[in-house]
Image (cartoon, rainbow, N blue to C red; front, top):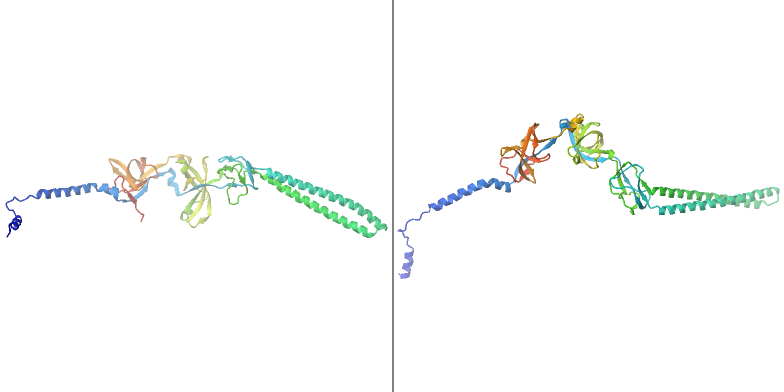
Amino acid sequence: MSDRLAEDLASLRIDRSAPPQRRWPWVVGVAVGVVAAIGLASAGKPWLDARVWKADVDVTEIVSIAPSQGAVDLTATGYLTPQVTARVGAKVVGRIAKVFVREGQAVKAGDALFELDALDAQAAAASARARVAAASARVATARAQVAEQRVTFDREQRLAEAGSLPRAQVDDHAARLASLEAQTKAAEADVSAAQAELVVVTTGLSSLRILAPIDGTAVTKPASVGDIAGPITGGASLVDLVDFASLLAEVDVPEARLSLVVAGGPCELALDALGAARFRGQVVEIGPRLNRAKATGLVKVRLQEPPPSLRPEMSVRVSFLKAPIDAAKLNEAAKIVVPASAVVDRAGGKAVWVVDGGKVRATPVTLGPVLGQGFVLQAGPPPGTRVVKDPPKELADGQSVKEKTPS
């Protein structure tokens, strides 16, 4: 055996004289790390859930309840719609020379709105008068010729009867007289035609001044000076007029609940543009036809004391009542109510989980007395705010949520 091989074999021997290595500190360190990781994971689970997982929640809403709510049979939404409107156009084609109305201006029936350039119409009227005069002159000439020929005919007829003139000469004069009388009638017809043309042109002159057909308010920007006006044939009008006094609330009522609506029945109306104000109304018409596609019927309601700020197409909510409401109850402030199922205890007080942009946040509230299935809200989110119903305990601020689909 070579010396090199002996050295290699010696290096492979186990040295039993060395003290054994202690591995338990390493094992303990690993165990402690695992326990710490589990603890951190448990502590961070809500944080992780809030930012990664979406919680399935039921959603309800904070509502505003009016004093008349107990008398409401049905509520429907719609818009204020005018029943009397006018799209103003011109009877004749012409260039606008003057404008007497502006957008938003109230006008009376018969008020001047526009005036068209009269130059061409005046020239046409002058030409028509000249044709009438010329035709009248031809009539006068023809009548004079007839009168002259009749004198000659009468004289020659007496001479022919006495035998002094041949009968053929008298017949020639008779034919000439008949021809002149026919020419006179033709000239008189020309006069009638020229006079009729003059009437048309004169009427056109009066049509150059465009008048308001109804009492109303201009709701569109009027045409400008220099624009070409003419009859409306599917195009834009010169100006649109709306009678604001004819505004009615038109709402769609589901066919299945149309039986709750009675002609002449009392209503309460609320308009989004007028805030919390409420108005008394009355059903004036129930549409004779239903909308098959929507399964609804059209109901028209009149405001009994309409405010001056009403405008067409305002959004309106109509509550159909069992009985009329008096002025005192109408003016009583509405109560904001939060459902009891949405209220939770948090940080020693009451709160609700507000749903905003697919996430929730805890919002403190101050509760008043019990009202129905909820509480009067003295301080907190406004009506219409969506809140979580029966919120789960593990909800966290900023957590993403998904609204449950109704079963």
